[in-house]
Amino acid sequence: MKKIIQPVASALLQITLLILALAWLLDSGAKSMGYQWQWERVPDYIAFYEDGEWWPAELIEGLFITIKISAISLGFTLLIGLTTALLKLSNSWVGRGIATVYIEAIRNTPLLVQIYLLYFIFGPAIGLDRFATAVLALSLFQGAYTAEIFRGGLNSIAKGQFEAAKSLGLSPFSTYYDVILPQLIQRTLPPLTNEVVSLIKNSSIVSVMAIFDLTTEGRNIVSETAMPFEIWFTVAAIYLALTLTLSGLSAWLEHKLGASWRTQ
Image (cartoon, rainbow, N blue to C red; front, side, top):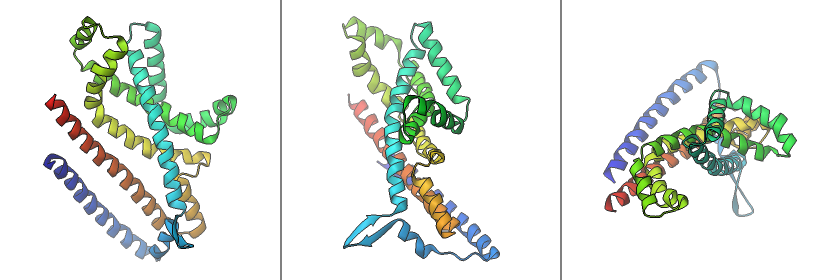
């Protein structure tokens, strides 16, 4: 537990100091421009009290959409990444070729261009709405990077384990599910966490399709209130809290998986 708490506490301290320094610089700059802070208005766009209950306001509603898009995209990302990695390592030159073309095409073109292509060309052709197009774009983009992570993890597992499973009469599915997959998860969890964080941050780009995620709601509020600094700082803080929570959860899960693996 100490190994988890120390790096997390150190990271939180560094982030806090960085935020304080940034806040001081921005406050000094705002004062020099004559900008008047209106932080007291920000809570109204997070939650409001009505009819004896608290209700989520625009920013929290946008956060829910961001989480929904990211969660669904993550599931497809892992599926696409694992499938592509297996194709990349297969004996079929067709499978390897398809995987290579997909990975290189996705990794060497901007996500924004991919979103536009899917939204304006391929999406309407196959009947996808904006939400489905956003999920597909994020899944395809992150899936290419996740495939390389899975490929590296699979290559790090000794070939003898595949041979041992085969000699025991295990089917290919049982070999991967019972023998290979647990080791793969343990070995790839840290880089996969980075991909999840990237997925959440990249989800802000889908705002170009007028999806009312956290970024879109923030932009709309800024246009209505003329409070760019307060709103965008709040949006950034929400993204930061979300990604830090995932990083902490990943560190805890990695510790638990490592402990359970050592006891086996």
